[in-house]
Length: 100
Image 1 (cartoon, rainbow, N blue to C red):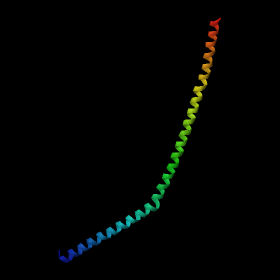
Image 2: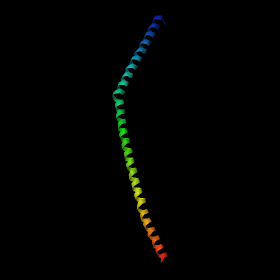
Image 3: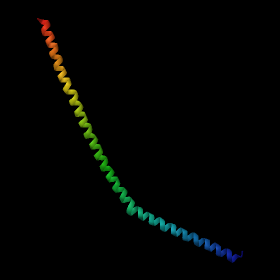
Image 4: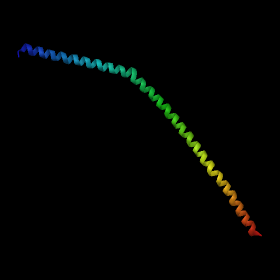
């Protein structure tokens, strides 16, 4: 190959590399604009919604826990007081019979 052809090939290669770099930079700038305009606001909005849903879930869990605790305390209080009265009556009856 002659030196002119080598220079032409080298210049074409450098030109192609420069064109590729320019296109890559253009695509990079376009992706950055898309991310800034569309993805970041969408993620921010999703984060806010997730925070609200988390707060609602925590509030619902607390409410359910309070209801369960109240139900359990009612269930344990009711029979135990009746049982206490019944035991006191039986013991009083027995002591009354024994004291005669």
